[in-house]
Length: 476
Image (tube, rainbow, N blue to C red; front, side, top):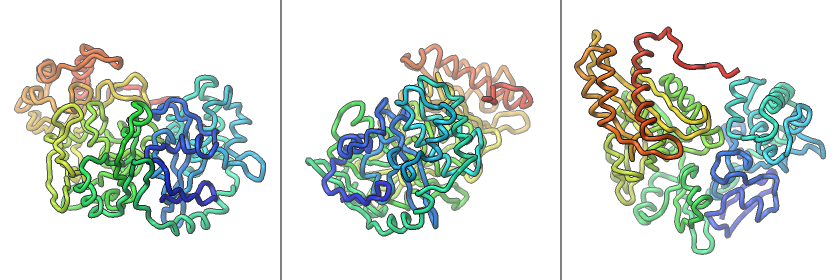
């Protein structure tokens, strides 16, 4: 059984198919049709809802894509939909701002924008343009254009008025804390197990190595929503606090595999600006609120944005199977397309990084859209220079092979050579031997190779001529 608050109504569901998404649960089971299905893949934001959960003495509000969230993720949280926003029969201040600023046209996408804006209002202290753009980047409108919607966000953030959620916050937090942990969601022969500790997870996964591990689910849910497949058995890790810890220990940064991208974003942004720039373009706010860095690695996608950066930094993984743990370089983790070195019953526990990122580390992503889009090519570069000579080189790319991969031949052309343009050109030509990328709807093979070569050239310019502007950074 799972329990959660639907606004202020306690829901206890004893027989839910664990393959049910929150979107389908709302629309089909509860008749709440304000949450829309636009894409069923987390791209449009029309299905945006907000989840609240205790965070110290406050509630933490997070926007998520209902189409990619399985019902098991609701346990112990408050689910807020657009139907819940009305305040004593009147519009919520966020809804009123959309009306006042003419932010809606056909109206299909409007509930999703309203919910993202509601979450923005709860998490902001006054209007900040960049924060608003990040909060709304995962919501698409094909009618109005975004200027009136951003104007509505400005009004909503600058003219906050107390609402029922603020008034009831202490009571809501107490009611959520009183909900006991759940262990199982099951119906129609399908199950989702909900371990509470790492030991429970290790035991369950050893007993059921055929199970699918469910972290954020932003990729796994596509098997249900896009491929229309059933997942007979899942093991959800979202209730295991130990998997969400991020800490410094023994000269290393240790990132729990279950920590969401939103949680690790501030730390990695302070770790190195290259992470800040790339993670800011990593999908949408809704996806970052659910997706985990461990899941991004474990699904072994050749276009996952996290892996190239981690490969260039010589990251390692702590893998666990039962009581046994082993440490594995990330470079040895990817074996083939969607294939990894994980053994049956083994899972990623932590991602390990050096305590500090090298000063000359850089990473760039090239995609059709600037934000909320999958990479055509992602490149990460990490050279160690000593008196003008390259002592060590790590170049890693996504989108160039069946797995995220280091460019070993290109690295060989760099090591021991002077840091000058001719050296870089030889290394750029060696990329043609390192990779034979595929052509698909995102980019052709020739384009991908040229982009990878140009990113290496860009790296040279960034280090040798830092005063030279090489990209547009303002979006006003």
